[in-house]
Amino acid sequence: MTVFEGGVSNIVEEAQQRCDRLDAMLVEAMPHWSLAPLVQALQALRGVGLVVAATLAAEIGDLGRFDTPKELMGWLGLVPSEASSGTRTRRGAITKTGNREARAMLVEAAWSYRLPAREERRYRARIEGLPEDIRAIAWKAQVRLCQRYRSLASTGKALPKVITAIARELVGFIWDIGRRMQPA
Image 1 (spheres, rainbow, N blue to C red):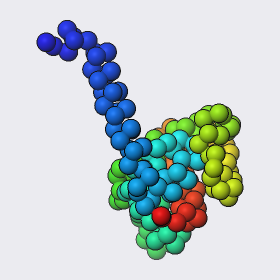
Image 2 (image 1 turned 90 degrees about the vertical axis):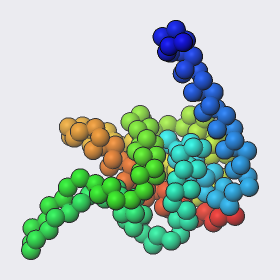
Image 3 (image 1 turned 45 degrees about the horizontal axis):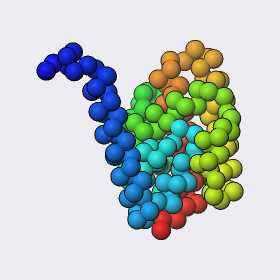
């Protein structure tokens, strides 16, 4: 049987079922994980669902080991490269020296900031039960990053560069949340 005989929709349905099973296993394992409070808190950020939050927590670990958000941005490879000589400094593309999986998750999450900031029902359900300071950080991130996206996109910058800049700023909010949430 070829792909065309079985239908592409069957392949897509099977892949979706596998993803759903993996998501269910992740939900089942979450309460036993020491970083579960961090994963829950990170989900307050727009674009950061269970899979993204769990990936970031697993790849980065304890965010308390980074003294500043810039250190975390550098560790993730989301800072511009630099070539300097004397008084001349030239900035280039991001370094990509850090963790590839975490960086990819951040870039995917950054796409959600294309739309205007709003509190929809799913967002309110995700932040229910979280401390007020975490909620405030998440809302501040949503307002700032949505505005920043519009600002950068209106200047005519290439969309991948805009999204990367949003991902870099998102790291600062993730660092702030991570510093407030202690592992269980």
